[in-house]
Amino acid sequence: MESLRRTRESSSDDDEHDPEGPTLSSEWSRIRGLLTAAESRLGDADAAWARVENGSYGTCLRCGSAIPPGRLEVRPTAAFCVACASVH
Image 1 (cartoon, one colour):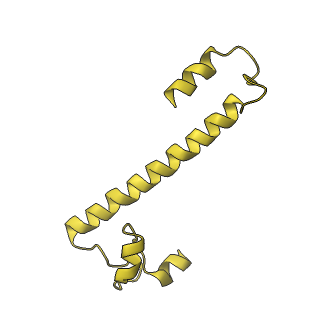
Image 2: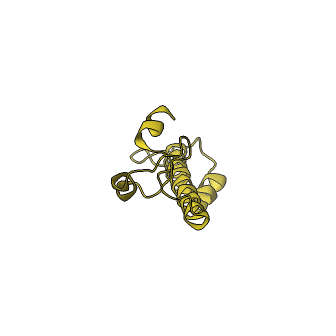
């Protein structure tokens, strides 16, 4: 992100830096999307660790039912049982 930011700031053209490659704006959007997704996953992991620490891991935050072990195996950061996740 930082490298692309410097490139965008030093570029005096209209964002078409390479006619055969992606524009700076499209590359910025792609990288920003990846960063946002990674930040979201990290937030989910932090929240799951907090639930482990307070003893509520594996319990649905909406209905209070146990989240099935199979769901937690596939999605360790799950905060909702399948029924509540489909509504949420």
